Image 1 (cartoon, rainbow, N blue to C red):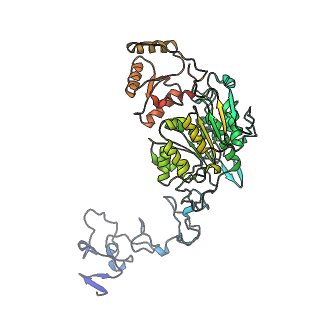
Image 2: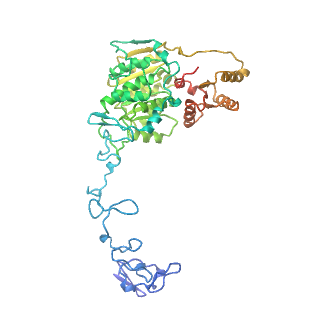
Image 3: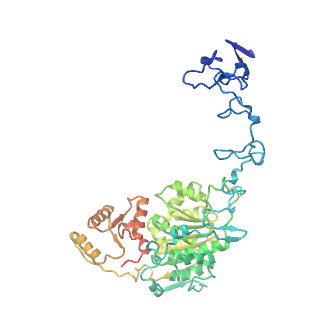
Length: 524
């Protein structure tokens, strides 16, 4: 092709811009209709210096000498002569720190961008690197536990304020706990502790226990704390509401604050300060969503301002948000068996670093048919064997299948019996009334009018009956709500929160709430 074409007197060189057909031959004419005319005569075509084309027409603005047009760089502007700058906020570009031009990120110069510096500068995205995990969180640095700064907002959320009904810590009969008989069997059983002190507990944990307004340990805590701190496995039979959650959380968190995190396996690091697979050091299994949520909230409370990051996973909730929570760090994992198996199959959780395994409400998990999932998690994945971990089992009863599970999962364990195994609590007054079906609601109204103060939990047989009775009570001007398996997880959590804080003091429930919720408050 010829180096230069001449069309109607227009020159089109190989370095010049393409001229649309409708603009050809109009170099000296007026601008097209609809385009405002520039004041004053335009420059002659021969004087155009910005590459020809539309920029060289009679109505184009003259190009300034600095290489930029009045409204930005023109197509033929001199970018090489432009002032040096680095990327910055809109409205103005700050001077470059590392040179006169943007530098290639591969060069490592002053203007380079290190992708591994996002969220964790200079850490390279590897596991076990020191990084702040948000306001109020601590760190493990140079073999020491460094507490994070106090956060008043988080403290109010976790611990409440004095006399906060949503954070009630003891029941009306708490002083009677010391009368509960405790039996510990096994060799070399440690002596029980009588107070929350150091030793055996870490000072950071003691501060959080004080924030939670816990004054003295419950009987199960008096024995379980020295047993777990001494490195022994534990099989505890204790009733719901006896303080089992603190019985295993206190020693596990105290050991974590003293010994620090376990290093992640080689190659476990991810980009941008996150790692795709989590390597928790403590695993707590429980049967229901509500129970794991409660244990998680307690773990958040006692891990406050520490390096330990608790996480919770359970079915029926958005798995995406749970995965994002895990990616930010997971040291203590509270899970239901089904959701944990799902995440293991997805390759998002590894159990190779587990030091502590807790089975809470073990009899309930077996009743719900979780034994295959539990055995797969404990025996079929990469969890350390019986000799390489510490295992704690808690159960309200001790039937034969629980005994078999203890034989397979525990080593040289201490058997702890708190109260009468399998019996009802002695602190609950029971009264049985025989009522015809047609009279049930009127009798219920009489009971509510007579004993209306405080919280009332009503169990029914079916989901439809729960909603029907709740609507009936609302129509009778009683603040009531219901909870059952057809409610979404959000609705169930909201109903329980309103019940706990007293905004809705009557809760009608099916078997979904038949376990664990008596431990929130003491009922008459």
